[in-house]
Image (cartoon, rainbow, N blue to C red; front, top):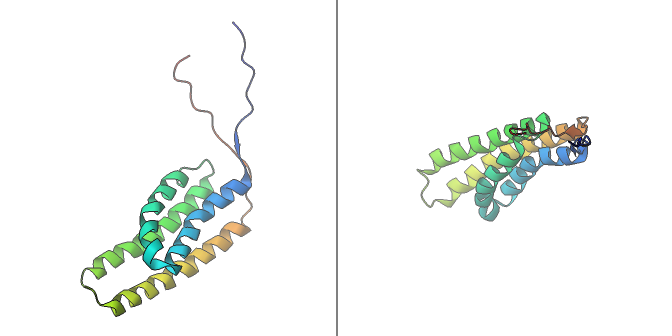
Length: 133
């Protein structure tokens, strides 16, 4: 039998983890600044971003992604419930958009600043358990 040489652990660079933690917040800000085309698309794309980043090897990425998702989905839930009664009245939709933007944009900016100030380190990707040998 031949002995396998130990493999170097795979690493996620700190810069990559920091960017991954920021992605959901960037999406929230852009979706609020351009609500008509991107707001609807971001509602769907955010689920993919959440699924990709929530269980990132770096726990902080998952934390920041989860917090940004909580904010977005809470706001969307309120919009769905309230918008049931709006019909096609444009002023109600504009007021709703302004309220949503006033909640999501500042909070996302605060999170982006918090992510930028945090000390990020390279993260080792854990080795998958060998089921069969």
